Structure formats: C-alpha cells, structure tokens
Image (cartoon, rainbow over all chains, first blue to last red; front, side, top):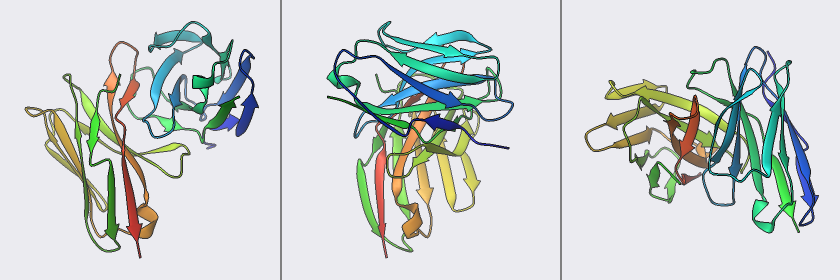
Length: 113
Length: 112
C-alpha cells in the first residue's frame, strides 16, 4: 500500500503567476482534503473532494480551486498568486467521506516572490 | 479561524522526562485527534478520542478529554529525542465531511 505523495517538493513563483500542485492519494481512498500551513501556524482547511465533487470549503477565495480525478489523484490550483500564499500545502486522503483519520502527504513548499 | 489552541506553544525537556501538552477548543465535537509534524513536513496521526471517552492510551501516549471544559491533554511518557516535533490537536469541521480544524501546535524539543 503506497502512502500519500505530493509534487513538487518545492516551488518558487512570482506574484501574479498561477500554480498547480499535485497529490496522489493513498490506495483506495476516495476523499482528499487540501490544507495551507503558514510558517509557525497550524494547517488551515482549504477544501475537500469526495468522488470528484467538492464536499466543503474553508475560508479561501475562489482563486483557490481544485480537481479530483477518477484515479483519486487531485490538484490544487492557485491563480493570481500573492505574497501571503507562501506556505506549505498539504493534501490528506481518507478512505471514506466520514472517516475521521486523515493520512497526510509530505507537502509542497510554495514560495511567492 | 483556529478551533483548537494548544498550550504551551513550546516545551523543552530532557530525554526520559514526560511531556504534557494541552488543547482547548470552542464548539462541541464528535472526536478530537492529535497529530505530529516533524520539521515542517507532513502530519502523522497519533490518536483519536471520541466525545464519549475520557481517556485513551496508545504506547507511550495518553490522551484525556474533558468535554465539560472543552479541553484535551496529550501526555508522552519517557520522552525520546525522536519525539522532537510539533504536536497539533484537531477537531472535525462538520460542514465539510471530515475536514480538520487545527490549533497552532506545541513545539516539543527533547534533548539527550
């Protein structure tokens, strides 16, 4: 059984650009959540997908969008990058829509200059 | 906004000592979870305690939950250098399946 993987590990972008981060869920997991973690803070919930449909969203603007694919891989897209978007982006998968424990990937460190 | 708040923010102890960190939360919960994060990387699930449980053990970990005070504590006994990490409590954001709401974390440093 493979764990949750994310790519790339690190990324540097400039303000105004767009970025796509990728996540491969743990085998058999149909729910994926994305989190943003600023330095020194706890992770903040961005949104969750269940069977390719958005299942809930945190307090993030529409320029944060996502996709989940039939093979349960997923993407986080951020448009019009701002300096404050610099953070560690974590995805987490779980085997069901109402399964409490989540399994996290190692994260993508995004730096916006 | 943060649901849980951990206390203390930072904790430094010697190997072999016990480490206790606390979490307070704001709304009613179905369960509370604790996660560990090493060096700003991914989080690892440690333990889940349900709202009808008062105490739970897993290896060197002991978690308590007091729903009347909306608080939980995580005790790590006989700490090791490898326990050095940030520890977060998390509750479920009920409006979004099982999305987790995290506190700011406690940074534990265990020196040998």
